[in-house]
Image (cartoon, rainbow, N blue to C red; front, side):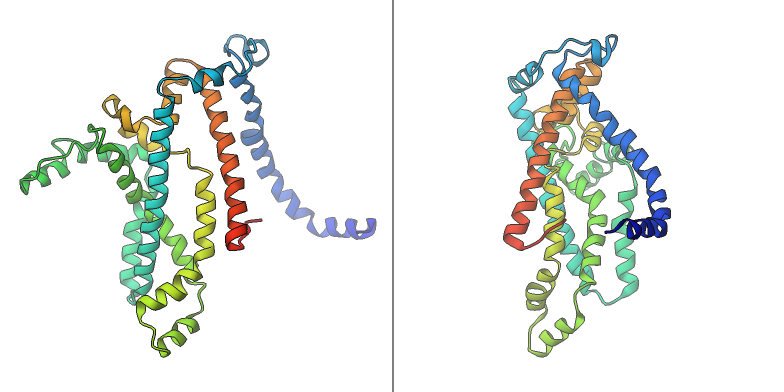
Length: 302
């Protein structure tokens, strides 16, 4: 591009670039600026000495992390809860989207969609308080179970039941948003394909299997790629509001351990090492998922 054409281009588009400046400033301040703090993971950080005065220890914090007696337990709990959340949420969202897509009553569809979507707007601080009351031994759910002579589960105090409670409540909160994403993808399917298949004698299940699902496959792949990068994020906001020492065996994850070690015990360097470890694994998983999506599905995000 010649200098004159480049000047003419910027003369036409400078308002757009000017509008981007505030977003870039916020991105630099809140996303790239704090990356300097990564050096804490390689130091014996002392807030009184600061970043430059704290002694350098190299990989000592990572060595300490990997040799923690509960490190394997933390990884296992994180992976079990995170993978269970990702798979169950997407399966439920796809199933609900397909069901709502077959509903012909617009009003009924909107009412159900709104009911599903409402919990998404509530924070886990609010929902945590509600669930603590509902799932306690004398809560609403416990009283209902007693009415039918069913022994009440200790939803938030039994280490075996707690992961299931976490996954189910996560689905309850986030499935509405995921359903909307898939419903939006379903609108992109040409209705003529459905009509042609119906004329050829395909029943409803055959149309769903051979037309609807392949039509939203790119969206499924995209969401799977995005979720794979967060496979070590098992939901700190949810767990910190629901868990307690009695369920540490199955409910203690990397993030909750960082909270206790970094903020309560003031082990800032160890907390930073865990965060850097998670970020590195997440980056590797995202790059791997993009490569797999391109290789096996011909799908590229960028």
